[in-house]
Amino acid sequence: MASKKSGSGKDDGRERGGFKSSRHGTSTGAGKASAAGNKSEQKRAAEERESAGAQHTSHEGSKFLRGGKIEPRRIDGSETAADLIDSTFQAYNAARLREACQLFSRKMLEPDVTVGLTLTGALTPAGLGMSSLIPLLEAGFVDWIISTGANLYHDAHFGLGLSMHRGNAQASDTLLREEGIVRIYDIFFDYDVLLSTDAFFRKIIQGEEFQRAMSSAEFHALCGKYIREREKTLGLGNKSLLGVAYECGVPIYTSSPGDSSIGMNIAALALEGNKCVIDPNADVNETASIVLGAKRGGGKSAILICGGGSPKNFALQTEPQIQEVLGIDEKGHDFFLQITDARPDTGGLSGATPAEAVSWGKIDPDRLPDAVVCYLDTTVALPLLTSYALARHEPRAQKRLLDKRVHNMNVLRREFANAGGAPREPSDTDAKLPMHR
Image 1 (cartoon, rainbow, N blue to C red):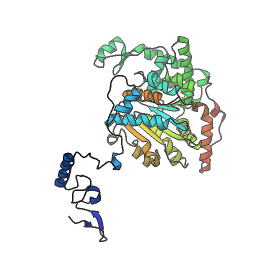
Image 2: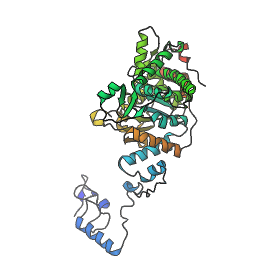
Image 3: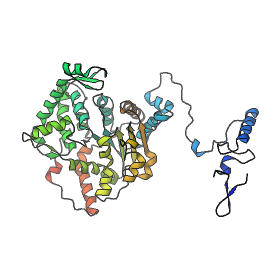
Image 4: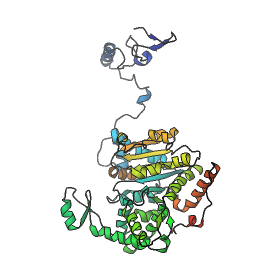
C-alpha cells in the first residue's frame, strides 16, 4: 500500500488510518505487530517465530513498556506489609496504593518537605488516631493537620479514658437508643461518653487562657495540653491525637469550627459570656503561611489527603490564597497524595484531582508526576501507608510548626506587603502561643 502524502506533498510515512508505518510494520511483515498492521502477515510472522523457537522481543524498546514486569513474588506468610505492597500490589487500586506508599516514603518524607495532612470521615472513632496517626506524628512524618471537628471530638474520648466498642451495623437503632448506646456504623459507645466529653471541654474552655479570639490551631493545642495531662493522671499513655500533636508541636486546624460537638460547646458557653472565639481568618492566613514559609525556606510542600470534604479544600486553597488573593508569586504544592472513594463527575472530587487542581494554581504543573490519587477506603489505606513509611524511612526531625506560627505569619505579611498589600503590624496577641514541654 502506498504511503499517504502530507499536505506539503511529502511522504510522511503514514499508511491508511494515519498510523506511522515505521511504528507498525511494513507490508513485508517485518517490524512490530500492531492492531494497525496487516493481520495475516502478523499472524504468519508469529507462527514462524513459534516454529523457530524465537523469543518475542519486538516491543521491548517501547516507552510504554518501561514499567516493571508483572511478576510478583509468591506469598508465603513471611512477608511484611511493606514487602507485600512492593512486590504484590501490581495493578488497579492496589498499584495506586503502592505508588502512594512509595511517593510518600521516597519523596514526601525528605527533610526539606513540609507535609500537611487532611482528615475526613469517622477515622478516630475507628482507632486510626492511635494505630496510624500518632505514629506518623511521633516519627516526624506529618507537620500540620486539617481535620473535621468530629474527628477531634471523638479522639478526645480515648484521652479521657472513655471507651468505644466494635458492634454490628445491622443492630436495631431503636433498641440501641433505648439502651443508651450511640452508633457510628459498626462502632458502639455509651451515650454518657458524649456527656462526659462535653463536660470536659466546657470545663477547660472556661479557663483564663481560652478567653480570647484565636486560631483553631491554638485552641486545639490548649485542648491537647489538658487532654495530655488527663492521660498522665489516668496512666493511659499516648491515646489522643490532640495530646500527641500538642507535645510534637503539630498545629491542628479545623475548616468548620462550629460543625462538631466541640464547636457546639463553645457556642453554648458564648451564651454565658465566655469569650473563647475560633477565628477563621486566622486559620486561612496561618495555613497559607505554613505553605509559603516552607517554600521560602528553600523547601517543598506536600499534601496528604485522607478523604475529601472541607479539610481537603482548606488545605488545597492555601496556594490560591497565596497567589490569587494575596498576589504573591508561587507555583503550587509540590507533592499531592489523595486517598478517596469520591468521584469528580458527581462533584465529590471536583477541583481536587491533581490535573484539575493545576488550573486553580493548587498544584505545580511541573510536579504532576509526583501526584497520586488512590481510590480506596481510608480505613484500609492509612494503616498500610503508615506501616510502609515506618518500615522504609527513618524518623525525621519534627518541624514543630506550632512554635513557628509567628515567624511564618511574618513571612506572609512581608511577602504580601512586597506584592502591594498593606498588612497591619503584628499585635501582642499574635505571639500568644500555648506553652510546650
